[in-house]
Structure formats: C-alpha cells, structure tokens
Length: 284
Image (tube, rainbow, N blue to C red; front, side):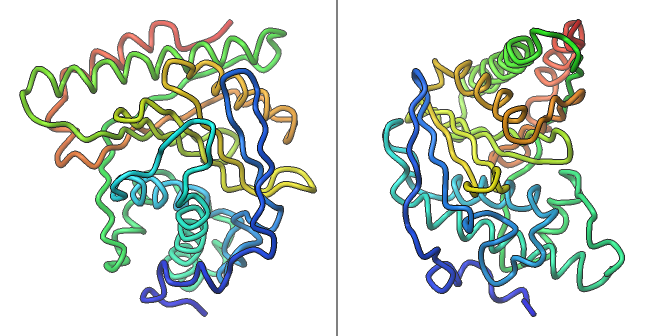
C-alpha cells in the first residue's frame, strides 16, 4: 500500500491509455471532459482510496498551481501541464486519504473531510510542502424548488466571487505589498468538492472537478476569462443537475491563498465581505 514518500512520482506509470480529452465550447467557456478512467476513483495506484478524497485532491491541485511558474496560458487551450498536475493531484490526494484515514480508521473509509481537516491531513505528510492557507469561509443557501434555480445560484455565486476578488486585489494595492497572482476557492456542495482558480496575470478563472461524470467521462476541467466568470458558474450549476440530478441547498466556499498570514493581514475586509454576502445569501 502507499506510503508518504510516494507522492507525485507515479503519473507516468499511471497515465491513462487514451491521452485525449473531449473539448467542448459553450459561448465564452472552454470545457475538457477527460476519459472515464481519469478520475479520482479510477486513476492511479491509490484509486481504492478515491471515493471521498475530492477535498484533498482539490487542495493539492491548487497548491501545485500556486507553485507552478505559469500554469494557465490561453482560455481556448488545455494547460500544457494539465494532464500532469491533474493526475499527480488525484494520486497524491488518494495517497493522503489512504495514509491518514483508511490505514488508521478502516471503519471511516467513507469519511468526507472539511477544509481545515483536509489541510491538516496534507500537512501531516511532510514531503507535500503544502503552502496554501485558508483566508476565510462562507456559505450560501439555495432553494432547490425554485424554477430559476440554476440562474439564481450562478448569479449569487458570481456576486460572492466578484466581491471577494475586489477585496483581495484592493488589499494588495493598499498594503503596498506584492500579493500572489492566484486566489483559490474550494466549493463543497452535496459532499463533492471542486476547486476554482483565479489567475490574475492571465485573467483566467478555471474549475477542476476530479469526480467521474456519468458513464463516459472522468474528471472535467473548464476555463474562461475572469470577465466571463458568469458563464463558468452557470455551466457548473447546470452540470451538477444534468450529471448528478443534484440541486444543492447549501454551498460551502473556502477561499485560499499562498500569501503568508493572509487571514491575519486582511481581517477587516473579511468581516465586510461576510456581512455583505449574508444579507442576500438566501435565495427565494
């Protein structure tokens, strides 16, 4: 079984037989559907731990993107290192789940981790050198019976992200310090975690979902310009319903950054954002 020293070295050994992702374009959004064997529960040598490892995988991928010199290039092209980073993140996340959860608490095989517990689990594997820190957490309620559910949820999520991006970038301007070029947002809904990445240098927002999607597709990756973020969010909410028949009543969102001490450096902004969002977070 896996041990902690086996991280990130097994992508070549586990590469899917078909290195083809199906590219789909919807308006300003580009989507890549990976082969069904390229997902958390079917890929790599630790796939037996991949049922509930999505939070770990999402965090590890974000950390890898933050450390990469330049991951995103053009919205119409899959990032050149996409297969490598996605594959290693899934393998590493499954490995952490095995080392921390499965090996020590076999009865907790189906345990879902929240963000703080997942970060602690990753940091317990010292060779991971995990650098991301949680900035703040918020949540949003939604009414699954609303006939305008997809549009309303997408608009509300967009508002949360737009306010947060503005505060994050303003903090860098007013402090006079260089802020990191990325901000990350883990979204948890219906016990599934996906990761959104905001790359300010490339002006790209992207979403990676490591789960299997239906019978034919594995993980999925989608990206567009930050300006067109609404397209990404509407697609994401619609995809949850189309693939999983899921209309979550609760969305948990955790913002993360590789900026050291980010939660202590921007506390007033966090309180303001949380209060602004709270006023309108329940959808009717």
